[in-house]
Image (cartoon, rainbow, N blue to C red; front, side):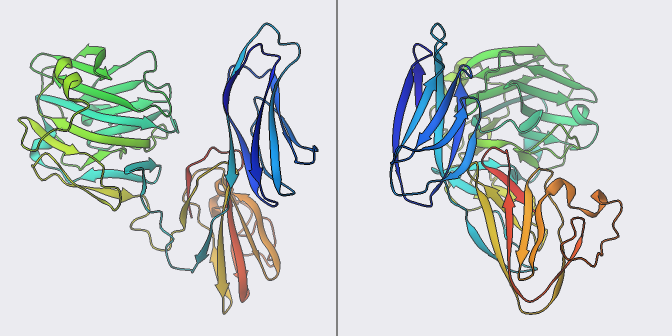
Length: 432
């Protein structure tokens, strides 16, 4: 639902059909101001939901079959201020999975519309190769769409030591920050960087980005949609030469301000020359042929499925999709796809078991465990579930439903393990 309240005191009406028991989430994605409200009215004319134009709401359940009305109402006093809005009403369906203790519930790479969506647990990489260090000149190109700014900085491309020296030992790297600006960073013992202004990267907008480093000319530049938007000087000394893998969407540098890329990256190209703005603009919409001079890597990222990425440069730098929990057996990992959704796992035990919950994600997700004897855990936060969060408990408590119990004694029977993400946006991943 997208529209403009002109004047701001008017109302818009929408309708949707639903069946009894369906659940929905009202997601306020954008509005010019909060001077208004949203009502959902039942087929019988009864009010079902009322919320402000600045407040998400749900999930809520419709009580009967029929056609429902959504009213987006401006305030009667807002006669001189217009109000634009974008609101979605999303059906909420809770996926149910079977859980077996000791067996991993993996989070497979998500390919949407033929493109790979990176959502926190996956990144791309290829092994180190001498030509990927590009000591004198380099161009990075890609189409990017950012779904969420999850931290202060997210890497798009990273080649470097991946240690706590940070920028000093980056061969080359391209980042986006939570203001929507791009940062091109390299190091020769000390960091050199250039940052855009004006926030050219907007959420949900597919954008072509390019960055060049020319150490012979002493310049580094950033381009957005074929237009130069930033430039700075760079020293003429060679950068740090890394023997680590080339990472896309991830850095190994240990900082709480860094998170893996959330969004899509398409048609990644690395060149061993600093291409001109004219060259970048002329070719950004066209495919590049294998063997093109100075092209050293080209992942089109249009495979549509799987974890193997072809290198169309002809130089054999094939890539792979890697996951945070690939080498951690017994992990339960999943994703909340839409606001208000829960992920439900069922567990059948034939004999008594002792289990411990180990949080692998620093989020405010909650988990609930219910079984034959009732509720063992009710909506406990991931951030308060590991043993270090419980200073007064030694891990064993006789009361099976104790709020701070860490070791859970489960009797035979069926259990329900539910993951919820209260107040969180969609497409977030969990791991435990």
